[in-house]
Length: 454
Image (cartoon, rainbow, N blue to C red):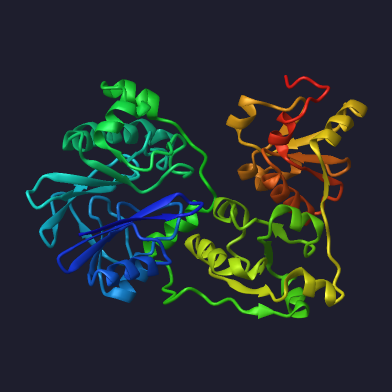
């Protein structure tokens, strides 16, 4: 038997392949789908079915891509009348044989009206695993706010029915395989429990400690931040994303051509923050390769082509991150990097930086220093910086005008990574007098500042 989970970095997206006999099934695949083909080929299995738990909002589904390469049949929920441009509907109770095993569809509405879970039964027809999509996570349950505040209580009530009347009765020993892990935007309280079971969630999941439906709804119903790129993902995952055929090859551009194209594109610099701060292409956005999947969908524009600056050894990984979010217009990368940019005599920009010690001295000398804190509300609530103005990085594009352009601004976060991203956005929009605080809160806590932390 083949069973494997695949983790998409940054998005905290989980997908799965199950194979037995001579066939395999993939659940909620990502767009760069070569990993499933390689896993199946190594075990001499044919991928025959692709199952979608729901129309995903946070990444581009790889169902069409994988079906194009393998001929596998795509199945999605038949319990919500969405005008899918691909695949066939599946309904509760329908079964897919996989050698001696079988997968049965289980309608589990709540996150969406049509949401499907899939139960894997062993050769003795006992439930073994349940692929819960966005219904149940480790330490969390699915968000129920996508149909608006007016339908929040209704959707949360449906989620209760799905959890308490369909998932939990499967039995404590059943392995739970969700579509996301810790760090996903699809659940604010997902914990870093790599593997879990129905029994563990029944005992440890704080959302499952309310047997009464009314108490569950009161505890679990909440409106969460909706990422601006969700709308793009929903459209692609309804009508079908363009089939790529293979991972796109991004061509190197000479500095002069790169400079010309940059006038009508987003230049994304994926180097480490300190390299970006030292010297970068004017107008470029700092999105360190490690953080790219977390913030690209929140901060970049789908209408503009992308140009990349970074380490060529990271290029394939960067391209994977971008296509998973639907950024297909990648026109090229700066051949030779910033070294060639400077050798071509082109102007570069830099960001001012200062240490937390220097910030402390500046605060002592000037109580009117303007500090922009771009951490999350939860982080700020746990420990704030006296006098700082808070705008979360993910809210920043719509609140940029709250930052003064006529006075020095010190940009602060947890480490210096997010503050570099935000400073690059401000600089691109015309702000000049900016300084990134190196080390962020970690550095702040490592020294004794004259000021109390409040």
